[in-house]
Length: 103
Image (tube, rainbow, N blue to C red):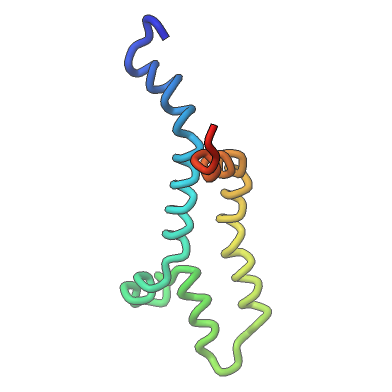
């Protein structure tokens, strides 16, 4: 990479090498933030400000739980993380197996 500026070196060499690891770490961080229940339950006090995770927990608080509504909201709640995983699946596999084998 003779003659490349530091920004070009970073963009053309370092970022492609780091991409699998960045996607794996980013996906795990997103899933941890997406499934956060305790902070949302403790800090959000109004019914208009509930997250989906807290709303799913509130469905089970009733004596007669609406199971069809609970399963529908649960499916909708699971779609964004699954879609993100399938979009970045190639990078996820590369990032998770990068340090697993010795070359």
